[in-house]
Image (cartoon, rainbow, N blue to C red; front, side, top):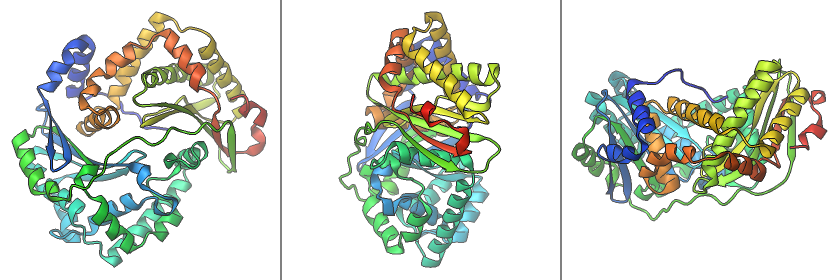
Amino acid sequence: MIPRRARLAPSVVLLITAILAAPAQVAAQVDTATSRLDVNGLQVILRRNTANDVVAANVYLLGGTQQLTPATQGIEAFLLQASEQGTKRFPRETVRQLTAGLGSTIIVDPSDDWTRFGFTTVRDNFDSTWAIFADRLMAPTLDSSEVELVRERMIAAFREAENNPDPMLMRLADSVAHPGHPYSFAPGGTESSLRSISLDALRNYEETQMVTSRMLLVVVGNIDRPHLESLVQRTLGQLPRGSYKWSPPRPLPKLGHALLVRDVQLPTNYLLGYYAGPSARDPDYPALRVASAVLSGRFFTEIRSRRNLTYEVEAPFLERAIGDGGVYVTTTDPNATLQVMRTEIDRLQRELIDVEGLERLTQQFITDYFLKNETNADQASFLARAQIYQGDYRAADQFVDDLRRVRPEDVRRVARQYMHDFRFVYLGKPSALSRALIDRF
């Protein structure tokens, strides 16, 4: 399951209050604190947040799984992980000691549409952390012995994830739902791909793919624009510009039903099925997001609360350039659970949800969404999604309005249009699952 956060930071409470109370005024308020600049092809978005001294800086390396082939899955994550082992200016131990001493956190987060390479620190330590961070992007040493240590560490992490039902379920579900599509690739790599990526391949990737036209930098925190611009010009702005132009991957294929069963001895059974949704620029995108939230609420009520068939159940919506929706559950009785799921999907496709009920649910969804985007780093990704998917970071200001415009008729329409041809992965006891029920999806 996707982890959930418990409460909002004060700065986010103020942000949500402003958005919900006066959506028409949000753009003017936010624009005064947010600016965009270009440094040698590197797009930079700065949101000045003076509420605290925490600063988050994320570089989004565009392309994600579109950069990959079956043999190169994980190459970008591998390169960035290896950069922790030393750079031109900072030997390995220096990188670690300085980062720890500064109290900074540098992360590598590969995903379907980009790889996020970022850090969080306090304002006083921003410049020092930036120097290490930028050098890791620009001049990693890539020593052969250190690279091998990183390779083995990543393979060990992959094996550990394969022993955890949820990560394995999600990886298999993408491969089953999108065969032949970039979204079928594992952005963090597989054991076989990580073993096959050579040192020369890493060095070539660094030389050819670390170009400013592939980079979006988003900084959220109490940093002023002239200072940030100067730092970028002296560091990442010196990289080659390149000629990269991001575009979303091709539409997801319409492939019909599918089921992959893995006989795994577990205390419960795990089931995840995806269907293909619209692109992030399609007007149906927010409507399907709301429809998924409605379905999740109904699943929780009917499957967990009333029938006690599960501890975890939802109708996930995958927020990426081409959206996916689906159903997820862990249960000892998958057949009974599937019957209830099918009933609730049918009801959503047949009946109109109550207008007042939809308004309450949308309000709750907006609050929950901002709960999951409370930190400066999360707010940076919120802006990045708008810039990458919509072509303008200011589209983030329309997020609430887009959701509020969804009507009951829209929910029913997108449920009918998209919620079919599910492609499932099942981990558990094969005899406990009816294929006839799966085929009804």
